[in-house]
Image (cartoon, rainbow, N blue to C red):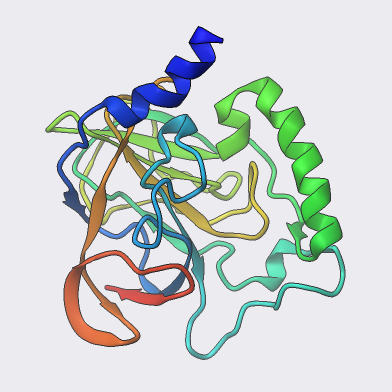
Amino acid sequence: MTCVLLAFLAPRLLPVAPTRTVHAPVRGRWIALNSPATRVPSHGLRAYGQAYAIDLAYEPAEHTRPAFGGEPMRAAQEYPGLGQPVLAMIDGTVVKASDWRRDHRARSNLLGVVYLLVEAAIRELGGPGFVIGNQVTIRGDDGVYATVAHLQRGSLTVGVGERVTAGQRIGNCGNSGNSTEPHVHAQLMDRASLWTGQGVPMAFRAISLDDQPEPIDGLPRNNQHMTAI
């Protein structure tokens, strides 16, 4: 009981790290599905260092994502985000990189989501790598770690030990791991381990929002579009 209580309280008792302003992990117009600009923790829990994580789905003005509903499992190719470039958020060195996990079909109605929950329970047994799917983690020069996840199988352009710069393409948007549709999951952490890492607040540099066209440093709220260059 004591261990459970400590696991719940410890992240809340730690001081909040200062907000890092980073390069957006994508280009173009994307919609926020889970954002710390709306609530913290953004995904409802602090596990795996995702207290301040954001999910982004590609939704260009000329192409609407398939609406939720209809068949339970759509082909991932029906979503415009599949294969879109994913960029490094910070300068640094790649410390983790994987792209061998498959891109599964989207879970596109309530039955599909229930199926995903069953899958998620099984993936939890394999550890966080199976939960976040294909990923790249970069250690920044200031000691912060930037992770992008759910990447497309076979799409990575970088490897462990490689030096990268912010804005450099490191892979493609995919639908691996616990993902209902092709999207990019992005987060900062205070260490490389998803088991013990604590989330670090972040803001994207020079993005524009649908209701705020002038560039700002910030994040979109849930269901708000952002455009990144």
